[in-house]
Length: 216
Image (cartoon, rainbow, N blue to C red; front, side):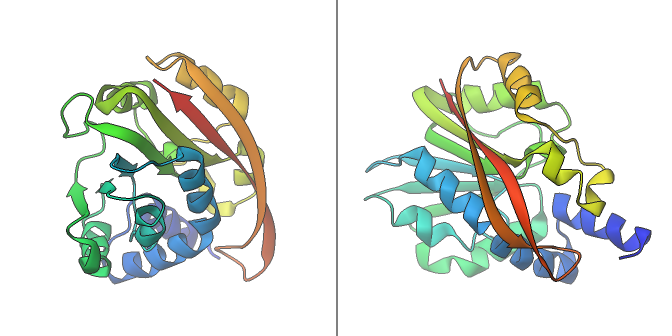
């Protein structure tokens, strides 16, 4: 891909827009599904819990979350108007259990201690003020709640040509240091790997990623 094409791809990965954004959203759901399902398993969702997902994309995976336990309430939040509308459209069947919120990416528009569990997959690269945003997550998480943060490790992400455009990358030590600067203090790191299809070339590559389990 040319430099301009890589820049456009990077922009859509951060904030999908329009018809191209819908296409990118479908691709992200497909390439991230392994990381997403691993994050859901790590949350250990139980009956009657309220779950928040930050950066839900098209939420094509919502059924997998709602099937884990009984009487789950799901809230998804995203900065992309396109993904907000696409998620609502794709998940009309679950509107009694799920709602989707559009926001500006900095302040979570929820009351303190609203959610039992919170997760986010492949969004941390785009947080402008990561410590402040972690503290926002801490604020809306109930005491004793779990936050699962899943991200591709720096060494892997640096090999992807689009990540030089407005991505902030982390290895495990850097992420652990970042989280320790927030109100969160207890965390567990788990490394995973999987084979995925490259976003820029139609070939299989090995992705190394981290699932960070953070307790309040």
